[in-house]
Image 1 (cartoon, one colour):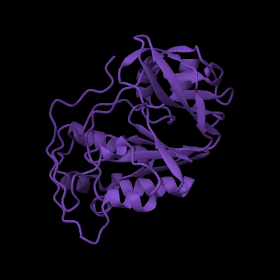
Image 2 (spheres, one colour):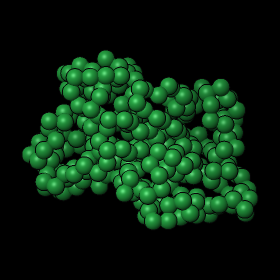
Image 3 (cartoon, one colour):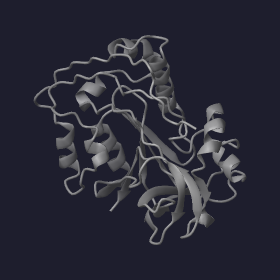
Length: 296
């Protein structure tokens, strides 16, 4: 099954904005707020080289992707199809060395970069202003790209679940502000250390719980970098060593939710694991496009 398929025809995006010399570059803001936190490659890869202007083509900035990247979410019909084939869910009782499971951890092919906050804040991000957004970003109405953008914005506007705080960050600065508002400034940022693709993995020795509370941010499908960030109560985050069927060794992040009573009864996790909401803790691996903020 294919999970990430670029659109054959991509709209051209051209946004040119002069940024005030008084504004703080995204990288500078990171160093100011998080002077003792190394900037991970996942963040550096999304920074623009230079802060006075932004010019970009949307080629590579859109992709067809399933709604399963951001977990857990209210049930969508497409999740029933995609989710049952992904199989990245497991029970907390399986959290021990020797467990084997087929993992599919695709990497987003969306190459969209962060805009400086001043630029990002000048562009609306609301379903009510979609025509204006499409016009500003030179995306044709009723195009496949426009439909993807509409869905992503609407997902950001969905009400939070019980025990969840959520926020869609349209700039690195706003992502930093949300994460530090939940965890403070003494934090680390973790990502998966596993190659993309699908194969059977065995849980290795040395798995560890890295946080009782974390902020998880997933990249959205948008012309510039937007990250869907959320935090859940009663959730633990683990780093799990993996040994692939090909002998490769890597590590991947997993989240275990001890309370699923607020999840939709038809959520794909319950279909995959054949359990009911609120009965037993549910765990899932995070995709390679996610970054996990944890307290030090």
